[in-house]
Length: 84
Image (tube, rainbow, N blue to C red; front, top):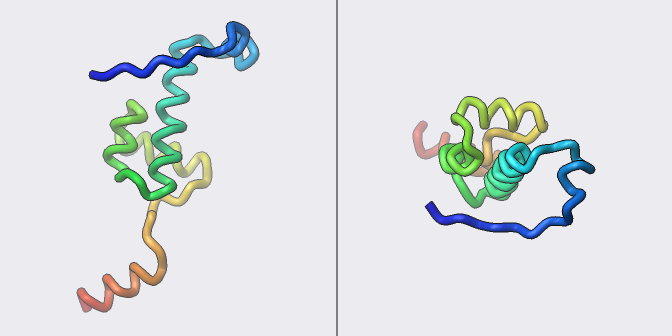
């Protein structure tokens, strides 16, 4: 698995009251949520990047008040019209 390394100020962990491991988990999940909310990746891929199950990812979206459905109303109408 590829590795990405960040250089951060030494006091960032104490300021956030997070261990480096907690910070890393939060950064992965935050990035996954951002990319998902921008429509760049699927829920499954976001969960994988975030290091959580798909159910846990959906719970996190709900907690942060981010829509789990990344489809516009017009796209839903078109899909329903095709299927109907």
